[in-house]
Length: 116
Length: 112
Image 1 (spheres, chains in turn green, purple):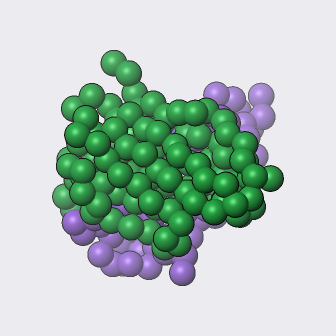
Image 2 (cartoon, one colour):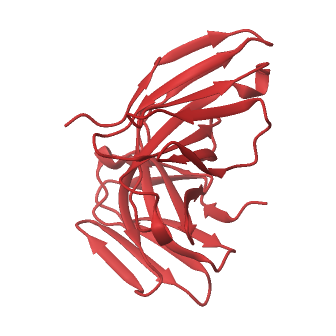
């Protein structure tokens, strides 16, 4: 079975541009979460979506937005890119929303975004 | 505010030795404590996880020790192997939200 897939693998953008990252969850998984991992640090939570609705948002500016589609795939959009947005963007899927932290999250390989 | 503190930042262990990574948390609402292993160019992979109602969980060479009163937990890797060389993250989550709070990571190198 395929795991979580993300596209593209790598991306180079310039400051001020906009970027869209894509994620396909494991088949049957309804929840998708997005994390930002800056080099040398642990992943930071950005968003969680469950059944196409936003269920959680981390401490990120409004330049970051996301959505989930009826097939449970998801997109993360970042507008007005800054140099500090350079990072590995990880998508994780889980079967359910994760009641009381019971649900295992499976991570994709990430999209490496470089902002010049 | 960092809610999960991890140490050491890097660790070098001889093959066959014991690798120990420590974490401390602040939020008493956390009720799920996973450890993730990450290889270069890959996403984090769940290694082992524990809940606060048990003090220890062992899976193969990997053991989590949990001290609820001290709000600390640790990962022990027995008989460490070169293939264990990776970055390890402790993490925590809790309540109805499934977002995971990660520690800052430990880069583990196992010397042959």
